Amino acid sequence: MTQRITWEGIEDKTTEQATIQLQPDSIRAESSITGAGKPDLRYTLMLHHDWTWKEFTLWADGQEVYHLMRNQRTETNTAFIDFNLTPFTNTLPIRKLNLLVGERVAISVLYVCYPPQPVEIVAQEYERLEEDLYRFRHLATGFEADIRVDEYGLVREYATLFTRTG
Image 1: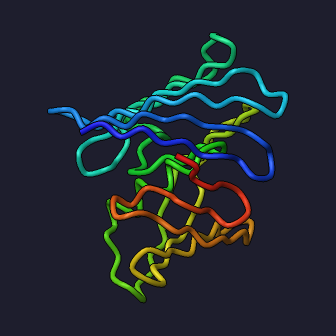
Image 2: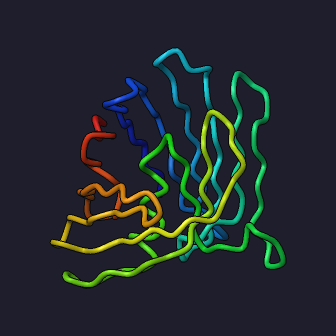
């Protein structure tokens, strides 16, 4: 299965074009993010079939910015990764946790930013409000937003941050 998706960044005026491929041994997401005076960004995210991350690489104008691998012995040992410029990484906990309507759970997430900052583990919470609606909370900052997803758990609308256009 291959799925091609386009998201528009509402606040930062970016466009993301992602390809998500279900492979025999993994899930592979490849994406490019352009616009808003940012360099041309490209990332690859490799996942296990249970929607936990294995490897993340980000390039800016062809130069590698991050290459992270999930490791059982280091600070990168979290099931989930969150990259601030894409709504795709919200799909990981939504798919993995498979919450029932009314359930909520707090998780640890490896948080990655562009422009580059030190990666850190942060506490986030997901609550399922309706079949296709989740509330996301960043517990340290108090930020929260509603996320509407499609039947595959892929983001359609992320409050004021992203909307799916294709």
